[in-house]
Amino acid sequence: MRIETRAIHAGRRIDPATGAVTPPIHLSTTFERSSTGEYPLGYSYSRESNPNRKTLELCLADLEGGKEALCFASGLAVSTAIVQGLEPGDHILAPDDVYWGLRKVIGDVFAKAQIATDYIDMSRPDVVRAALRPQTRLIWVETPSNPLMKITDLAAIAGIARDAGPNVMTVCDGTFATPVLQQPLECGIDMVAHSTTKYISGHSDVVGGVLITRHDNYLFERARKAQRYGGGVPSPFDCWLTHRGIDTLPYRVRAHSENAMRVACWLSAHPQVEKVHYPGLRGHAGHEIAARQMSAFGGMLSFQVRGDRARAMDVAARCELFIRATSLGGAHSLIEHRASVEGPDTKTPQNLLRCSIGLEHADDLIADLEAALADW
Ligand SMILES: *Cc1c(COP(=O)(O)O)cnc(C)c1O
Image (cartoon, rainbow, N blue to C red; front, top):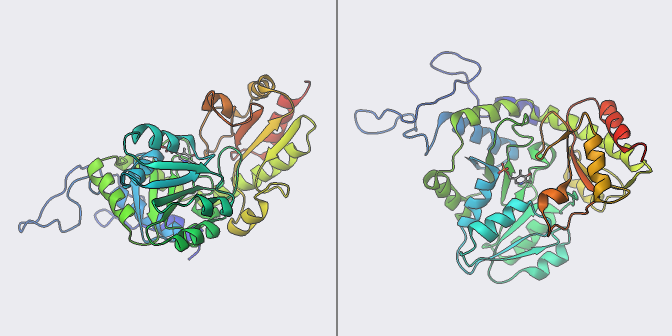
């Protein structure tokens, strides 16, 4: 069945106890054993497994075309579980513009783990191949990336990892694309990670993460242990909210993409805009790959204003519809000056603003940006 149908039905069933169409939230932390000591329904204790988490995991595994999924309390809990599964002496390849939180996980949380990491230009397969070491165990990919919306050729990276041997695992952070726009596992990537906080839950009201695997592998098994015994699990209510958001995911993501395309086109013709970063634009370096591996280009874009940091801050300050806030993937449009969030060693241009294009009417979003960019 198509993704619209699976988003609504995968993992779901009518509640056998009550006939409820909308699933109940199972707050019980503990589940009854039979007189012979088994757990006949498969649940024993809510950290290990919970009905709301289980149905969400079934749904997300289905949407990605994966074998199995593990839900975590946040997107970064997924990254933590993966890095925790590596061993001293192991080597990671990660994008030089990777979501900043992964750098924190590797550099701070696992500072003493003796894991080496090279941050490289993942959009260039030749660079990736040259950076491989005998100790490389993980290639972390993020596409589209943040905030320049760089595109990585997933099939090319999967091929490089395959050539390098069975010990090299690939993980794609697909948060910006969602399973609706891009299917990394079909491209040969081993596992997909999402911050479900963003488009998947879709309403800026719940933090969560998921790891989905194409096949059984040791890193996924270690992530399972990190989930169950490390204990970074989402609450039943968080799972319920996330699952509710998924009902409308395919329609939302397509509307986000259409709006973003309109805003990107409009911005690229504006005299006060120096550059627009959106993979849907023909001039974008990753456009051709994106057109091949994505079904639409997503709701995230960034643009550089003509001028400096103060000018960019001023444009953000003059927006009235766009909300000045971090994060993405909700119904409301957000605008953010990334460099000031990322701190003094950021490579993000100071005149850059990142937008999460929401579900308002595109004409209203354009009118807001027009007013914010005018009269300079
Ligand atoms: C937000 C985000 C994360 C981290 O997820 P949290 O749910 O905030 O922990 C990871 N990767 C990307 C691309 C993100 O946007």
